[in-house]
Image (cartoon, rainbow, N blue to C red; front, side, top):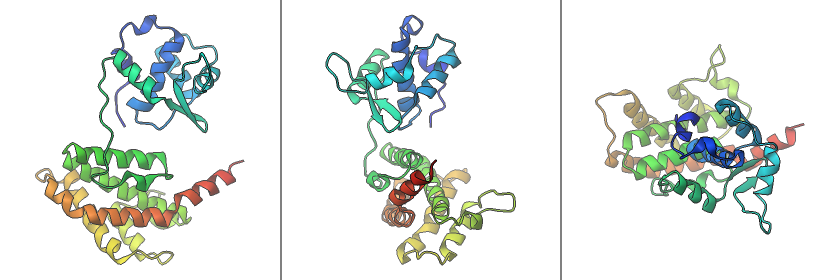
Length: 257
């Protein structure tokens, strides 16, 4: 996630202060979704942007979002609504980018691993996976290795959470184990079976990420990444399958009051 502040972002927009509250809101949606790499935003988050910058709020933010997320005659469609969240309609996003002279970065490719693996999982996993793939696409191989390590760590934790076994990977203070212990506990657990290829590959994925993150004289090369690509695909498929996000998501939705 980018560290760019809202104040810094609006400084790039010509005459932002003189814009109507509705026009300001459109840029707030851009900031909250595109700049912050979020899959969607809410009326409450937009309201916080007005508060943070101390601008007069739009009178009815939910109604504005809903109106401009609906296909209707004489109404410009600006947003796409997915459940309770909104993101920018792609054509309108491009219009906003022209206004602030931004060149959008190309989308991540599937050259590192297929991003479709993370369809119907969780938004934070999509973000991590996308960043990892973009790092690969742009030759940032140390960053790619570190994001791969993070992805592995999150998937292992969520494997235990999915099966209500998270207590097995926490210390006496309730903190999750370090990755080496997470891996050992994952491979020793008898609730599931980890395939032979994935079992052999997981430690090597961790080692590459560790070296990139902690060894100041080590720099991951493309050849290093290429060696683990096939193994990584096996591990990602295996863990996502064990978690079964579609079923888990339904269970969590059903449990909500």
